[in-house]
Length: 302
Image (tube, rainbow, N blue to C red; front, side):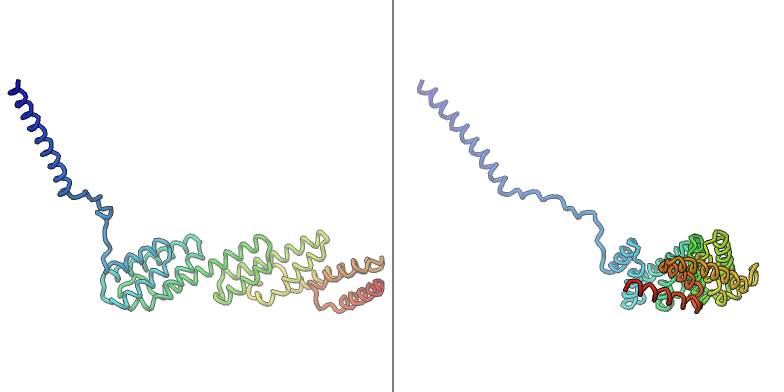
C-alpha cells in the first residue's frame, strides 16, 4: 500500500511539473512575440514627387474649371524652370484645350463663354508664345474669333430686344455694336428692321386711336433715324412720313386735353398733354397749356 502511494505521488509531481513548464512557455512566448501592426492604409497610393507638384496643382484647377488659375501656375513654374519639358507640355495642352473649347462655344452660339475664353488666351498669349514655340494658333486668329463672338452676342441680344419690343434697348445695342463693327451688313439689316418695326407699331397704335403710344413709337423712330441713316435705303417710308404721323398724334392729344380742360378736369388735361410731350418735347404751345392748368389747379387747392 505504501508503495502505491509513492507511485501516485510521483505521477502527481510529474503532472504538475509539465503544467508549470507549459505555462512558463506561454508566458515566455508572449514576452518575445511583437504585437501585430495594423496594415498600412497608405500602402499602394502614389506619392506626388516634388517635381510633379505644379502639374498636380494645375490639374486640380483645370478640373474645377479655373483655367486662369491653371495658366498662372504654369507661368510661375516656367519662370523657375523654363526648360522643364513636363510643364511645357502641360501648358501647351491646356492652351490648345481652351482654344478648342472657345471655338466650339462660338460655333454653338454660346458667345459669352467664347468671349471669356478668347480674352483669357489673348491675355496670356505673349507670355506662352515666348515659352512655347509650337502653338497651333496665332494671336491674330484669336482676336478675329473674339470679334466674331462679340458680334454674334450683339446680334443675339438685339434680336431678343426686338422680339419683346424693347426698341430703345435694341437701338442702344445697335449703336454699341456699330462702333466695333462699322459697316457690318448684319447690323445694318437689324437697324433697318428696328425702324420698320417702330413704324409698323406706330401705325397699329394710330389705327387703335392710342395716340400717346403711337407718338412714342414714331418719336423714337425719328430720334434714332439720323444714327442709322445708312440703313434707311431699303425702307418704304421716309423721315417726312414720321414727322407727319407725329403731327397727327400731337394734334389729337392736344384736342383731347382741351376737352378735359373745358370740362374742368385739370388733372386729366395735364396728364394728356404730358403724354404728348413724351414724344414732342419741343411743343411750346403744350408747355404753356400745362403751366396754365397747373396754376389754376393750385388756385383751386388754395
